[in-house]
Length: 176
Image (cartoon, rainbow, N blue to C red; front, top):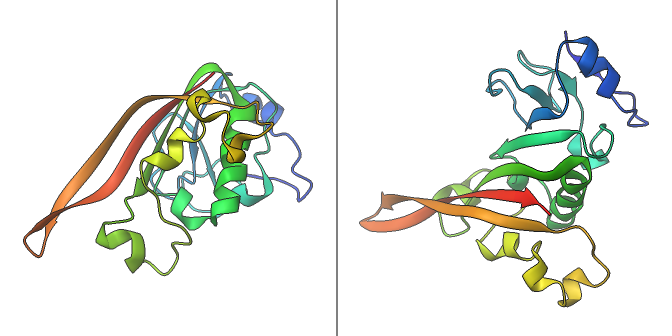
């Protein structure tokens, strides 16, 4: 049974525990029908597998420091750049220190980044580095106290028109 969060973004921690999920949680953000087995599924759509029906543009309806692992597979590109930045901050808020977040997005040079009319932003590897301490003195990070460490970053390439193009960025971040 899915939890429909009220528009005020009430914390669903206790409801997830009552459903048998053990904190710190493992959350599949934007899971759709393809939720990672055994994880909490959070999505805007009420489809099979979704545990929490919620629009991530409104924040994350969980208390601070209650997520140990997370994944967002082909989710961030459906947000504007500002919404994605706000979501990165929200993810940091709900993760425990040392928690790992895996994010997969289409690479901006790949054909899938621009083909889907639902994609609102495109990504390059450097986007994720701006959330690390190495960039703390940039204008973007002025006053920012929420940082991640890039644990790994990989790209998937496919052949299109005799060119080997990057099509996906797969990054794992660790909350500092």
